[in-house]
Image 1 (cartoon, one colour):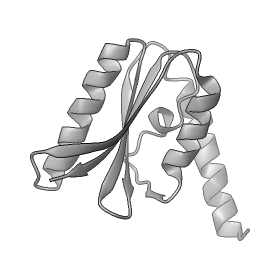
Image 2: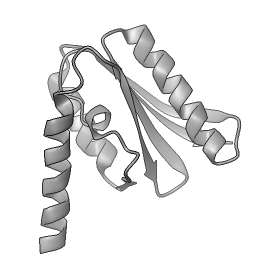
Image 3: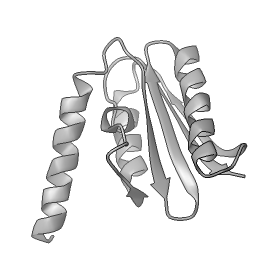
Length: 125
C-alpha cells in the first residue's frame, strides 16, 4: 500500500469517526458518484420516513445538478437502529470505487450509530 493511499484511508477513517459524533438526533445526507453515471445517495435520521424523504430529495438535487429532472432507483437498502454491522459493511461498500469530494457528508456515508440509514443507487435521466 502506497503512502498516499494510506494517508487517504486514514483521512477517511478520521472523518468517519469525527462525523459519527454529529449524527445523533439529526438527519444528514451523502452522495458518492460512481464511475458509470450512478450515484450512491444516503440519508440518516432517527425516523425511517424522514430518512426516506431526505434520500428522495437529495437524489433529485443530484440529478438536477446534472441537468436531469428524473432518476431511476437501481438499488434500495434500509438499515434500522439494530443493524450496526450491516451499516458499517454498507458504508465501506458505498465508498469503494466512488468519487469523494468536499461536499460528501462522510458521517452519512459511514453511519454506524442509532437511527435509520437509507441508501439508494440512482441513475439520472
